[in-house]
Image 1 (cartoon, one colour):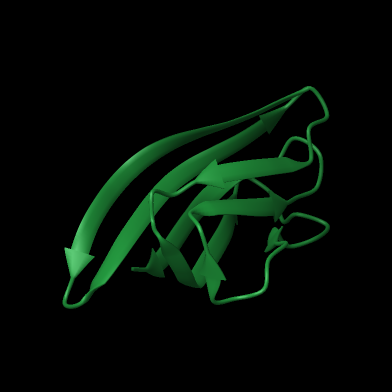
Image 2: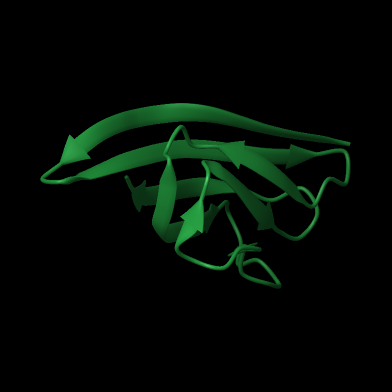
Length: 88
């Protein structure tokens, strides 16, 4: 079971920092922690990707705003997707 991420962009938009990444679950994995590098996470957008509709939408398991840059997501087994996290 493996959960992996690959950062695709880290930028400043106005007075906010924006972290973007791709994630993938393999071997039956159902999510994991994403290290965003943000000091506070204020908003999150998660999108699943693939050739078919997923049974359940990926979700984040946090209360926002969240101090600290670790974001835990939960998905169906073997789902891949994208995350955008906005904060400070």
